[in-house]
Length: 172
Image 1 (tube, helix red, strand yellow):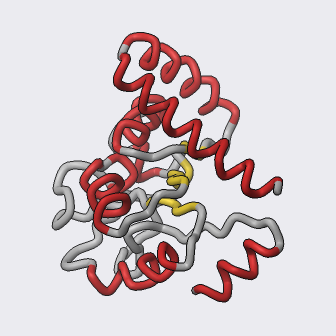
Image 2 (cartoon, one colour; image 1 turned 180 degrees about the vertical axis):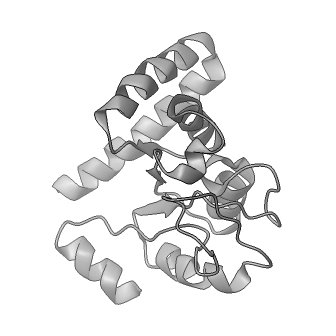
């Protein structure tokens, strides 16, 4: 893990370990259907711990449900997973990006705009949209949310600062 991250850093590529907190035991691809990852996740965290220790600049979130971590929210929309586990417990201070917001596991729970807001509120910094139709829904939704909620506006500002910091590192 360390050698891979260091090699990518030397090439000005931002290594992005995924899909946090681990999809190894999922029975389906979250792009195609909702997935639940049962049981304890300690062994799934091993490569992510190594990536954080090696200074990975980004981590991509899973859209699976991890009932032992949060029985109600998929990982990409769970503050218990994003903020509690990744930021606080593992000490990750880099950029957190969602997997594609158009994944079926997301769409099974809500539309893309609401999902994007939930992900940002949970602690994600970037929301991956893979189609222009999604961008057209997500962008105005997030603008309205930020204009109407000072706490959310500050969350978005913090996320933007983190992303701009990474961009600056890559351009050096």
